[in-house]
Length: 167
Ligand SMILES: Cc1cc2nc3c(=O)[nH]c(=O)nc-3n(C[C@H](O)[C@H](O)[C@H](O)COP(=O)(O)O)c2cc1C
Image 1 (tube, rainbow, N blue to C red):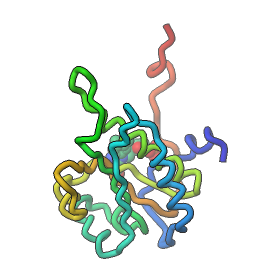
Image 2 (image 1 turned 30 degrees about the horizontal axis):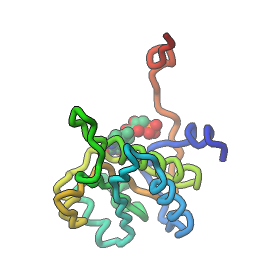
Image 3 (image 1 turned 90 degrees about the vertical axis):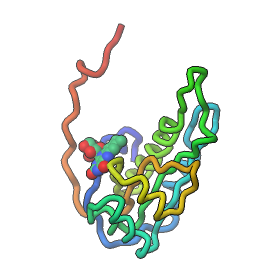
């Protein structure tokens, strides 16, 4: 699929088929995240892939949507707080770096015909507990991964003139 087609085709998918994700596809999607750029090339991230049904069920406590925890694969993008680059004014690039890698992953999934949905509204302490994360590991985003069972229409976006300026 052409790159721009991938960008246009991506949707947040909130219903998945009960069909496993092929290992090669999963690996390509994760590789897309692994090779993402990051500030100072710090790569302050870790992607935790959950296929185990019992563990997926535990995610109910972190994000209740059934379409989320019943998807065949769940991925948690974690930021490694101590490894992220800090700008001279103290700003940490942790969220920026993890977000870029997660977007690589999401677009790669689209190119593979797989669906995802960025989940930000989750219970952080529950995720830390379920995945046994250490103090320095911050869950930043979750996504289900699987074959879409729906094909939503594109969502509204602000018009070009409102978001793009040429000076
Ligand atoms: C940072 C971020 C957090 C989000 N959190 C959630 C969420 O917690 N639950 C959810 O269902 N969708 C979530 N979404 C998906 C957005 O609602 C979705 O991207 C937006 O409505 C546009 O729809 P589209 O992705 O299909 O283009 C999130 C998206 C982003 C980028």
